[in-house]
Length: 200
Image 1 (cartoon, rainbow, N blue to C red):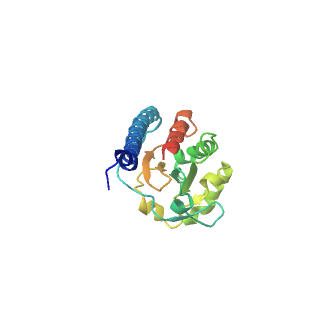
Image 2 (image 1 turned 90 degrees about the horizontal axis):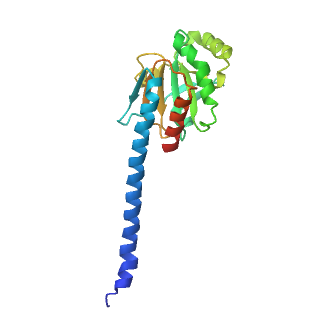
Image 3 (image 1 turned 90 degrees about the vertical axis):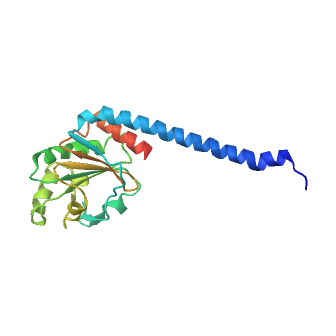
């Protein structure tokens, strides 16, 4: 059988060239996204008391909390595929309570249609009526109607101060930990979350 350069080119060289172009484009996109992410972090950083990025793979644990309808909600499973803003609060934490209306406003921002905003109370089970009173008063039942009734969420995440918020990727990876009160409806904060939603 004779060697045909035209067949060699079409069967070997062209597919290798296509793969090489795709790899270069993928690397370029990754580098571009990383640069854009650093710029977005720098712009939003002044709005947070503390913004900790998790470079290592820490994943949201498979724990259940009580949901707005009173039944169990598996945070990792039930919100899989969506960027999640996971806020941890308590009725005895004044900054936490002040954040609730802001979280509600952010949850309705038109730039964040695919982002899940979930505020979980860590109040003791005996105080659940107080929790319900707070969320009803501020009309945030759909956002803040979650309760860590068995303490497993607190035991599984690095919760040291309140309020604390974790930004979770659609695959369940913890991306950021934000401590302190935040004006969540601020356009810079909303745009930052929208950017995260676009790249994850």
